[in-house]
Image (cartoon, rainbow, N blue to C red; front, side, top):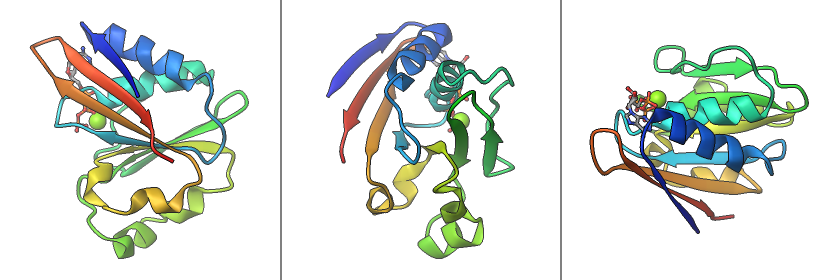
Length: 142
Ligand SMILES: Nc1ncnc2c1ncn2[C@@H]1O[C@H](COP(=O)(O)OP(=O)(O)OP(=O)(O)O)[C@@H](O)[C@H]1O
Ligand SMILES: [Mg+2]
């Protein structure tokens, strides 16, 4: 488990960018963390590392945002309103495997056994420790 302190949004982007260096297609990045923790900022860093110039915005309403990377794509999910595997099927979640992308998932804690669907899973937990400070832990759980 790796632990980082972020002192502002740009730090969180940099931590996400450095983390993304070793990612492979179909890897799952499962976020845990309250609203405004910085999950979307961390994903902006991952996008940067994958060579995505397009701005990464919250998939809160779309549920899924897709970005084409230089070598690896990025699929960014928000499961805030999803709470069952049936819902996951309904939004087409499983169609995003084998499409040469990493899957970044906000509110992954809404689906208890989500990690079962992946070969490789990183749990990224972001905790607010102050107005601009965050504790970020990254653990390869599978
Ligand atoms: N160290 C920090 N890292 C990331 N964001 C920070 C930090 N300090 C302050 N912020 C602010 O916190 C907010 C984080 O927003 P972000 O959309 O990334 O959160 P989120 O975890 O994705 O929330 P949601 O669950 O609502 O999607 C932004 O407004 C950002 O400016
Ligand atoms: Mg978000």
